[in-house]
Image (cartoon, rainbow, N blue to C red; front, side, top):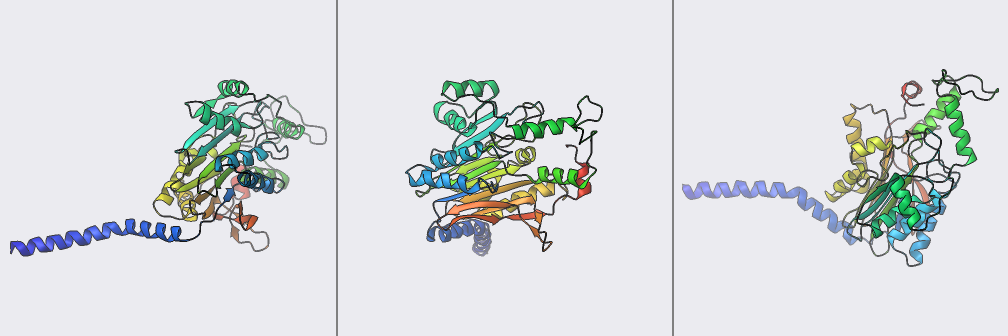
Length: 380
């Protein structure tokens, strides 16, 4: 009798153990299946979809790889293109300033090959290519982040030249915002634009709000090189007309960027404060570690953000990811509505691999905010 109970107990234990092992075995099978395929590399994936610069960005990254550079070299050189483009209002030179009319830039860079080493700068002024300063923070200091005056002093120490990053176009955009911010202040617009509008009242006003809300194009860029090493980089001016000293997700490792050679990489763009709250990029990489594909992992984190706001988030962000085999994906909290078909589509992202450079469509989980919801937002 005792022997029989012991046997049954062992049988039940064995069945329970096998059940607990199923998810693990599934992850192993997934990894083996992925490893059996020829890896898709080199590969560059970026959130940047600005038509005038996206191919230049990934082209610069691919050129760095073809010239013998590492994934880290490619990430830096690619992001430098966006940082130096005067038409890009969300990154570096030409970007919209903070509320007082000058730029404070954030950037980060991360290397999977070097044990997930990272560097970042925040609220950096007068330096055109902050991601290059971030790389030196990683390689030439025992720190991970420098900010403000300390970051600027460090940049000057390493030969970076200060310059005025505010273009005439960005200055005009800032001045228009300032003149229309408050009907009780002492700023006036030009005579052909009389008065101040504290809230949107015309289709043009709402369209400007929608453009700013849906402008998720601060840059995050991920690279898988021919050797299987992974790197990533981010750079941004932050929110249009942000509070002086505000720091967003881009320089926060685990929020705006995370890289792990053993798994893959993820990056974010959009409402940086929400991205920080969800540790979004780290979360995506960890879900890939659990066996989800890059697309599934991006969707998981976006859904989590939606659930935490009771299904009605008043913000948007976009996640891009790749894994060590060269699979990739993209998802945004809110998508777009196709003008012709009225179907919900995802925010775009840009891919460059052996098949060429191309714009692809990610998945959007919720439709855009309505005009009424946009008008109710606390920022203008």
